[in-house]
Image (cartoon, rainbow, N blue to C red):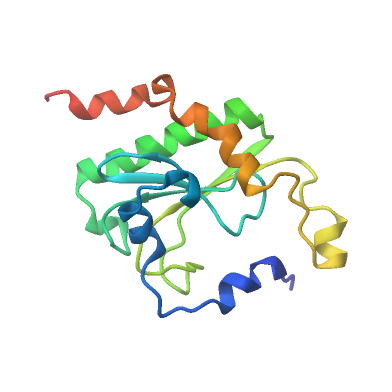
Length: 173
């Protein structure tokens, strides 16, 4: 049996779980730079993961404080995944990774650190990005600070060409 250790996430694991939902708080906040929010609409938000596995590790979340996809309307689900699609397009365009992990952890048993507010992780991956530092030294090497990642990605999230796919939501059927 193999084990995956992520010691760099200990700060998050030990943090106060009685606090308010951080995603709901990000929707209320207006200081996107301070909160590392790259994109927001009336119902969806894209932000940097504060405890990344790699540079470019982003999260997309609906405004709704819900724990499962089945609780979203078809339109809300469509918008969430269109924003995920646009976010993947930006990550591929800017970082040119060898691959992407895109995932949703639902429930504590499903690996969710935040079980009550659904969110989608997007994680750029490069061949060899799990190097010896992680396996031997219990240290994750992330070549870019959160501030730098935010500054690099923000212009792309402000560029409407990456979000043209959302136009389908405004069309009448």
